Every structure is written in structure tokens, then in C-alpha cells.
Image (cartoon, rainbow, N blue to C red; front, side):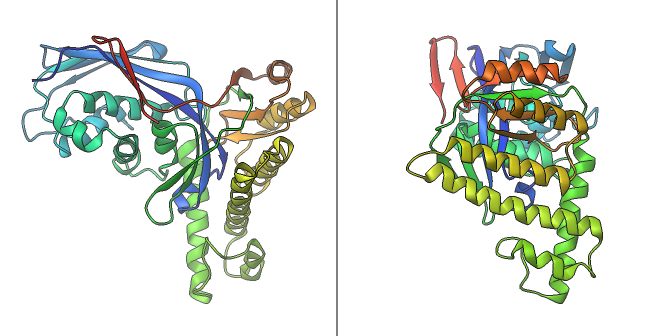
Length: 375
């Protein structure tokens, strides 16, 4: 029998500091959880239906509990609330009662800060908490991240990676390596304030992910037919020029960009590991990353470029587009005067937020007024 306590699970949004468009290539990334959060709050009810209120988007969801051995049918594209439920059914979820829940958050939606992944991570952890047999296997943040990736990416055949789910579930600043499974390392958070700027331009995640991901993978496959030793992990960006005759110009650009971004990510890790953190050097690396994302991967937009320029002129040390691109958000590193940078981003047409690095999953049980923080 499930418990009747009210449960609240909150999770952060995330920014990708370094390694944008790298995780699905199994290349490393550096992520940061941010203090814009989303929460799922609810409790069990006698009705055999899941009622989910989503006031931020003026929506409601009703999910009737399926018969034993059955799954919940999908009613829309990327039906994440139902996909999480189905993935958990396959992993031992046996619901005996329904739930009444509410989802609320301040993470910008469809703007590159992983609001969808945050919803999936929080919803998965909420359901896991209801069942002791699931908590034994899946309560740890990394396990929740794996389930969330299955629910969002694998379930719907999407081209994305695992970065968002681990960044959100674990929190802080992470170096995540995907070459042999998933290995993550917590980096010391020495960072000051950032300014997040929402361009208010909708992004096209699926088109950009598909163009960049398959452009890189197809280029590597063609090159390896001529030179089997070529790979994304050791080959130099300079090597790409030699194969311009066997790959398309677009493939050449995105492959070259991927290798340059790989090297910037490695350099950024050294910055975090140095005895004295170089805030200006960190900012310059962000700016170099943005130049590649803009000129090689072509995922930035004129408006986001203007917002970044305005932020730099107002004293930001560096910045980049955040997320898959084609719209959405940028962020600028502004440890010295974030208020001034905020005003400059808004003058350039964006909606700005001053943000800082935050923790990952938080689980709160109202009956005991106890909060358990998962790091």
C-alpha cells in the first residue's frame, strides 16, 4: 500500500558551460545546475487516475491507471508524463492507487535550460518515492537520471544525449564523460553570478540536433573508411582538412567544430582544477566556445549574438548560447556587476535572470517536515 504523505520533489534547470552538442557523440561536457527550479508536489488518492495540474502552461493531465500487464497509451508527441510512467512499469512499478499532483517552476520553457528534462527527472523521482521496491533500485540521483534519459530520449527515438538528466539529478558543476558508459566528476564550484537571457525566440531542438549529430557521425564514418584510426577522441581538428574531398562542406564544418569544442572542454576542466581559478580565462573560454557554436555549428541567432555583445560591453567576462540552439537562451558570466549586465541583456530584447549554481534533486516529505538533499 502506498503512503499518504504529501511529497515534493524539486530539481534545478541547467546550463551547459562547455561541450554543447557533445554528449550524444560520447564526448565530455561540463554542466552546471542553476537556481531556477521546478517542483512536483502531490500525494496518493483513492481514485485510480493520475491528475496532474500544470498551471504554468495552463494545462491539466489525466492518466487512468492501466490494467495489470498493460501500459498507458500516448496521446501526443513527446508524451513525457506517460513515458516516465511506462518506463517505470517495465521496471517494477505496480500502482494500486492514483495521485493528485501539481507541477510548478520558474525554468524558462523551450528555451534551452532543460525544462522538459527537469520535469521528467522530478516526476520519475516522485513516482519512485511511492514504492519501496523502486526506491531500493532507483532512488540514487544517477539511477533517476538513467530512467529519465530512457523516458525522454530512448522512448521516442530522439537524437539527444544524457547530459541534461545527470546535470539536473546530481547538481553542482559536473564534468561528465560518456566514452565508456557515464562517468561524472564533481568540480569545485568557484563561480560567481551568471546572467541568463531568454531571447524569447522558439528553438527547433529536433532539427538542429539531427543536423549536427548526424553530420558529425556521417563524416566520421566516411573518414574511417579511408583512415580507420580517425576518431573523435584523439584526432586533431587539423586532421579534418585532409578529408575535405570525401565529406560535404556541412559535415566538414560540424566535425571541425566538434573537435574544437572537445579541446575547449578539456581546457576548461583544467581551469577548474587549477590552484587559483582564473575568472577572466574562464570567460574567454566561454567566448571561444560561442564562436565555434556560431560559425561552425551555426546554432546561434542574430538576436542572441546581440544579447551576448551587449552583455560583454556591460562587463561580462564571456558567454554563449545555451542548449541546442536556433533560439532559446544565452548566458553571460558576470561575477562583478550582474545587475548592469542584466539591464544590457534586457535592453537588447531579452528577458534576463541573475542565476547561480545550485544543488540537484531535493526530496521533501511534509509529514515529518524533513528535507533530504541528494547531491
